[in-house]
Length: 409
View 1: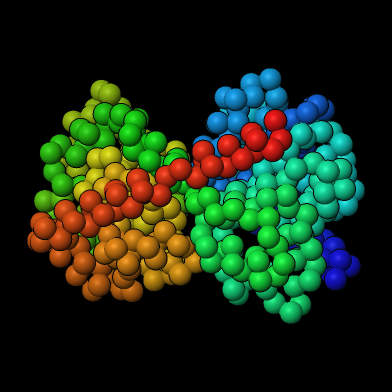
View 2: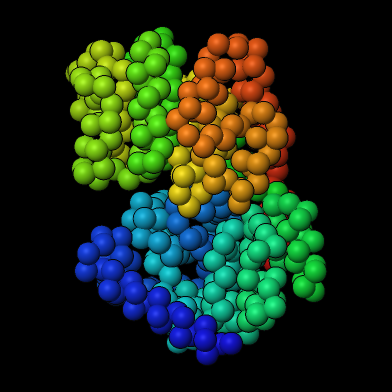
């Protein structure tokens, strides 16, 4: 099985290499790893994140550990180019790297160089050689905000190697009881149900959001519909809302902000009703008040945008899966999203509470939006339940950090 795993890793690298000739992200993934030089550290604390979403999820634990242990160097690795490019200069780390491909040689050399005291992985990413190398050296390895589903390879008859990867982990901090039960069903008992650190992150953000004067000026006392992390499939549906509700303001923060995607988005919307965030300055803020839709054409604002909203739409539900619903819910916004949300516990919880609403088509989007707009009691109840759900599920960060403190430091 290990031979097949190693072949799979090298095959993945070959596919990325081929894709790099015509795909910008693949090229960044490849060239970034080739160009980087990993500097020596001693007794570091290693955090690994698949991408930007996992960084934000694990950030509360990172911040707490850094505060408690300021003398230990923080090393961050990313698997994806998007996470690395955006956070390569974060002040939370002493060094940020791409995670080298998971081979025995790379794992040995990387861990030899950064010499971690502990390693903390967030939610996903189970790499055989890195985990094995940490295990062989008796370096504690923690997986935080982990979540498991019955359909994953760990629980299949052919998943023996992947089950072995799990056995290299010192402690799993899982989001829910089902994950704990699944791990216990394959003989893994070093599991604690601590919850999801994203709740701590989004709740803290909602208590002290960054002020955005441009957004306040754009809203101009109107009701505001915010669509975050949208894809083209989402945007085709959203265009109908701006026509039906001309007295509402709309903000669309697309998942991809290259020029071609932005131009296609603008073409979907009513003529002369749209402006871009990059076109607004402190000198021409009043221009924003004359437009119905504002396109966010930069990265990093979304978590603060929701403070100005009344209803939120979260993109991705017509593709691989929805993006972060909790950022909007923490501000008390009812959240709407597409049908592909079954892998996201928080989305399922919000639907059960009638604080989140899944739609399959334009008709359903128009219908739930109309209900939220016309039925004030229904709208208020949905928003209050969304906010309360986030608040009641905070606390994972403290549980994780307390445990690590008591067992390692």
